[in-house]
Length: 116
Length: 111
Image (tube, rainbow over all chains, first blue to last red):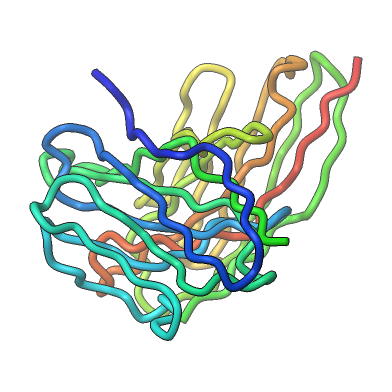
């Protein structure tokens, strides 16, 4: 079974430029998460989707960040315009309600963003 | 909100045992996870505790005391490949499947 797929793996952009990250969750996983992880810190949740509905986006900086999961499968996270402080690893994760014991989250490899 | 504390770094010797502690404060506890993350890679699931006690899985064990807001991850027979960051994450009962992560403990295993 394929894991969570993310692209690109690395991205370097200049400040004020736009950038987009793509995530394809594990097949059948209805819940999708976007996290941001700064160097030496734990992941911080940006947004959580249940199917195509964003059910928690309280930590998403809405002035410059946007996300979508139109068909309830893959998702895109966008930053426009990027700032120096946005440099981080952006992780995507998914989970399934069928895993009733733990609702374990499976993580993708992440996109390492560097804003110069 | 939640507050999750774990040591920033630890060093141990190959073949030894190491215990990584995690303390938390939460308004509605509904489970604690430990994840392992090698540098530049995705976090991978290690263990899940929702009831008090010890969960053993091979060389790794995880303990939970809900009354004390305390958990630890125990790694036995350390190997060089165990050098990684270990993330403690707490799920709140009223927040769906939202996890709040601690800052992670970077473990260095030396020969």
